[in-house]
Length: 273
Image (cartoon, rainbow, N blue to C red):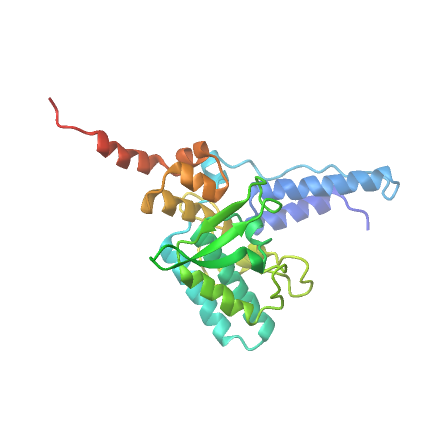
């Protein structure tokens, strides 16, 4: 079958109906266009169909991902646990617990999704911090970091996250120090595609996948939520948060630090003279 413009339009309509993000569809069409161009150059197809983007570019406020509320996060991981406990087939139970652990990890540290997917068992440690108790640390190695920066991040949830990792390790298909935590069950050398699993889970269970502004709520939204918590709830400086998140101080201040700046301004307020 020869791929035509009609096929490409039908594909786009299908993806738009699935509420695919503009940037995601744009990337998919770029890949399709490259493959078709290669096939044409090699003589596999007589002509290269014109690939035109049908989705209008959304306004700026809709192109960014929103933040998932603490209430929605708690309800989602509780539902994942409940369904995992009632799953009759082991692969389904493992998949639900794997997604739950990934959500907890991102929410507790602000680590990027692509960095979490490359996490190995050796990257998770539980250490004593002075005499105040234990803390879970997640290491993002430079070779898997988006910014090629080695980072060691303390988790907000303390030892609870470490226990969740160890409980999952007992039933996971991979458990050696250099093996992936979130490995695919079919090929343990590759990471599972958790963003798609999350996408299907929230839609299936009636969980909001966009906010009132039309911004998508995805696994990446949990990173935004975590960074916002670090800045505005735990009052960490933009410098420290930038180190944890593998981001720039400017980006942290611009997107998350507006409330903190106003709160810190209270320190400089003095009675009128």
